[in-house]
Amino acid sequence: APESDVAAGAAPEFLALVRRLGKFLPADVRVLDIVRAPDGFDARFSALRRHYEYRLSTAPYGVEPDLARYVTPWMRPLDLDAMIEASRHLVGLHDFAAFCRHRDGATTIRDLQRLDWTRDGARIIAHVTADAFCWSMVRSLVGALLAVGEGRREPAWCATLLTAAGRSSEFAAAPARGLSLVHVDYPDDDQLLARTEVTRDVRRIGPPPKLLGDREIR
Image (cartoon, rainbow, N blue to C red; front, top):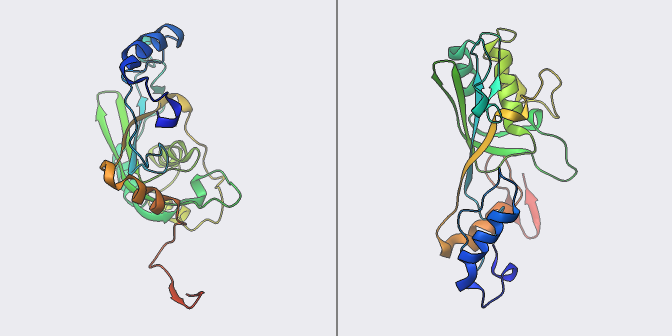
């Protein structure tokens, strides 16, 4: 929690606070530890990258009961090799407008650093990492790749989606159930403020514009 959210003299009480939160939070939510945030920390804008996983099961019986909240059953066969090939077209710095819900004034340019798949028997997992994500972007990426995996689209089709000016209606976002945020990377404490300033800046594709006086040259 940011320092302003916790009383200055409360540090010795953090363990007691963890215990109290364990009593009041619902059974599926737990706070494991509490530490005082360093100066300049912003949970959203200080982040370097986010790591998500999307989990599917193609087992004929669906999903085991203890995993049902975290894995999406997918009864139709999937061509994982085609999905892996299609994923390569999407990695990099692109405008992901086709995969994002529109928000006035918000950019849809993101640096997708990882998008690959692993299989363990009937379990298929997408591993997705980016500097930031638009609303429903991971589920939309997975939804487009499922269309490829089912043979409804060719792998190269995904590259054409990167030219779209707005959200695409050619595919549906994957169900929310299989999506999990697994980790967020932050820089060292002395780099937090600088990272926040970079993140808040407007993203562009290509080199930044040159300045002549107070005018941009593009």
